[in-house]
Amino acid sequence: MVERIKDVIISTPSRRSAQIESWLLGHGFSTTHQTDSEDGAVRFYSVKELSADGRAQLQSLGATVVSEWKHGEVQSSTTG
Image (cartoon, rainbow, N blue to C red; front, top):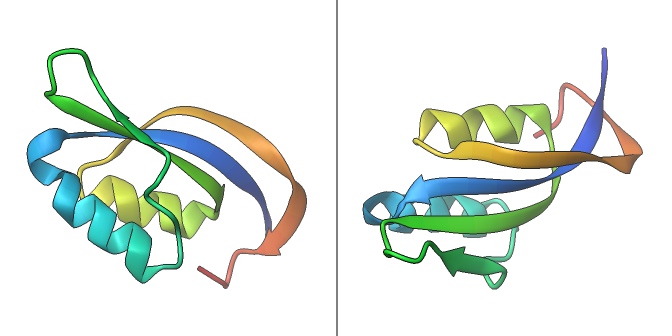
């Protein structure tokens, strides 16, 4: 099975952002493209080239995908 790699914007409650940042950095993603909600309760991250498996892992940590779009490449579903 083949999956499309997607670029996404995820959100997470600010109190959980350290856990999300740790996952992102541990999987080779950057955390430089982030912003906080006006009240500081939510942090948003732009994540490029995220696989479906990576998306599922982030969601299991409490992240919510708020926007996504297809990237031009194709990736096997057996990789993360």
